[in-house]
Length: 222
Image (cartoon, one colour):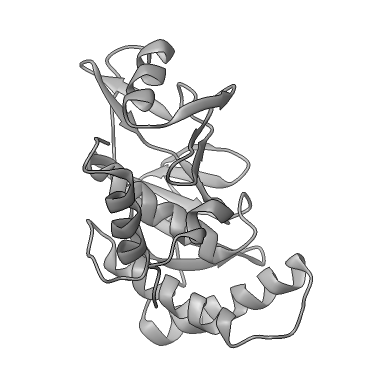
């Protein structure tokens, strides 16, 4: 992450990234599927509960993944590394890890895809590569690859805090940050999600949220 330009210019660029007008590293599949889900949301005018909405969204996502070749029938679950509330991590090879995520932290799959897109925008060196979607025990997971990062020492949280402040993200509580001008929240930045290699910070697991303030500025177009 680094300061690219003025906040207004960054926000406009982010609008164009989320809509697929600007390409980013490993972004095209994510942008394509996000645009599809966003368009399908806009055609639905019936009020639904969040749980019902996400269940139907998952069905649309699966159908799109099958039709577009992004559905994975079998996953090699060897070389298990770890798992948390939202994802399972496997060692793919000496240079990559494979992560399965069920988007539990998000109200919609679209919000989860926005998180991946934002991660790839801000943190190109650990950009996620979407390989597809799969289903395990009735739950749909995204399947992404990410560069393996080895630690050479513990992450200095004061260093992390200073780095984020330089880029406009203020600490709002514990390990959560917010960029008030952009309307972006970045959560769960503890020392297992941000690793240090030779003094350089590597963000390997991020939780981005777009607040209502992000969408207030005109400019976002499908």
